[in-house]
Amino acid sequence: MLIAVEGCCHGELDKIYETLAYIESTHGRKVDLLLCCGDFQAVRNINDLSCLAAPEKHLRMQDFFKYYSGEKTAPIPTIFIGGNHEASNHLQELAYGGWVANNIYYLGNAGVIRFGGLRIAGLSGIYNGHNYRKGHFEVPPYTESTKRSVYHVRQLELFRLKQISRPLDIFMSHDWPVGVTDYGNKEMLLRFKPYFQEDIENGQLGNPTTWDLLKKLQPRYWFSGHLHAKFAASIPHVGAGSTNFLALDKCVPGKRFLQILEVPHDPAEPLTLSYDPEWLGILQQTNHLWSFDSLPQYMPGPGGAEPFDFTQSDARMEEVKGVFGGGSLTVDPGAFQRTAPVHEAELGNGAYTRVLDEMIKRRFPLPPRKNFVNPQTTELCARLGLTDPLVALIAKNPHATPPVIRETAPAADLNVGQTEMLKMAVSDGGGNPEEIDLDEGSALVDDGAGTLYVVEDYIPGVAAWDSAGVDASTRSSEPDAKKLKLVE
Image (cartoon, rainbow, N blue to C red):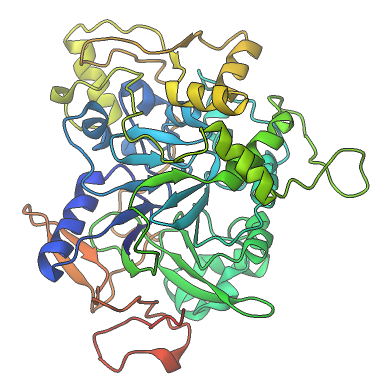
């Protein structure tokens, strides 16, 4: 199976899909699956944009609303996790995952899904120690504080992921596991990002809780984004096997944001999404652990009175399958439904304030924000006996706007809330020290407007690890092939 892995999407879906089309036309091979490692920005309208935590100058509608409206359809099955720049109000509708548009699937706060026989797991958000032990207490309308805390990883998701006992093929996280830099070319990374040095030495570069998760789950591949750098590593495990780690940049000109991998899979398995019975069983048996308070909560463990081991037996997973009639666990590709209104396309893809100014100039009414309950979550919760966290939060919080199942509205999005954007000092000067310059040897794609995007020197038939060098003895002898052949 040919899988494309992308770092931080930042709403640039058109560019990403155009790049994959270029690869297909150049090499004659079509990518089967696209994985996006966060900052996806599933922004449907101006209200969603106001819920995205980012400097105001970077708040743009981008491309997603065209896929949400049906104007465009993703040409390749796409799975993504959340990062720290998201339309969090939209993603809160789908805490357990679901379709955000036709052929585009969100993994939820944490989740496991199957595609073509591969088990793909993921964790959304980034680590923040202040909020890690809290419940999920944030609900729209957000304050400037909750607009940021809403995407902080919580221990509930880590606890659930640690219950997985069966092998995983792929794991996705937005931030890197702390310690992963010890297993790749750290010196080269620090040449480009010298300000990482202190965090690496202090064990603070990334998420300290996902390193233990990596060592426990031992997936074949682990993909990340967030730090806007390409970095590869190979983490050996006690006994046998290793995890191949790869982080990628964001989709902007000259950055190494995309990698094509050939991942072995069972050719008898259809290239469709299906639920994972082990994960569904874990969700069922840990449903009582939801907390919607901002106070610290503690997960059960050895020595306590509560059960703490929710490992799923074969018999238990058969029970889960029985909930679905004992048949297919295929995720219904037709389950996607639009809940919120769609952005008015003619307002353009300008900055947030410019779009607002245009709406005001046209005397568009500005109704209050709304919270939407997603039918996909409602159906899954009813089937498995789960709590819909958004419904629970709205019921608990007197300041939350009442839930709406679905709104039939004109194409123009009129849901504009307060313009409480965080003013952050962002340099308009030359280079951005947060990003890496383009290395030689990468192929470039012209988007027709003179802008070049990196296609990381793709070599058909080579599973490709990084030029940074995990094991120099496996490096290809071809001077332009900056890849390492992986030993499966």
